[in-house]
Image 1 (cartoon, one colour):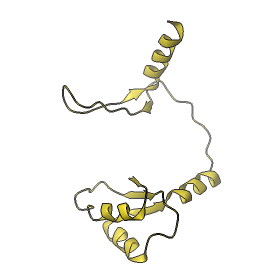
Image 2: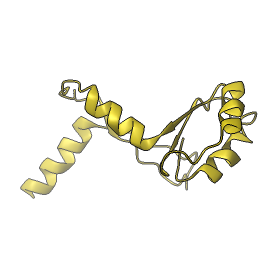
Image 3: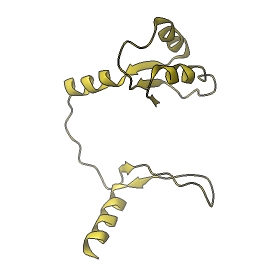
Length: 106
């Protein structure tokens, strides 16, 4: 889960018993805004806390080769509102390419 500040992150930690799938929280706000007691609460709940700046730095230090997507890879997840049923949405690269081709050649 990504939150913009430490206050929202703490509110999210209060809900960990209701969100068992929550394993990581990324905080966009600048570093050193989270107290040690919050880290202890997160550790007890099994949730890692990460600053966005740290993730950017790690990405710069641990570059990986680009991977060419296959036609069945997801390129974006776009959810419907569920007007006629349950909200859902996934789209593959082959769908994106077909839409782009249609728009280009029409």
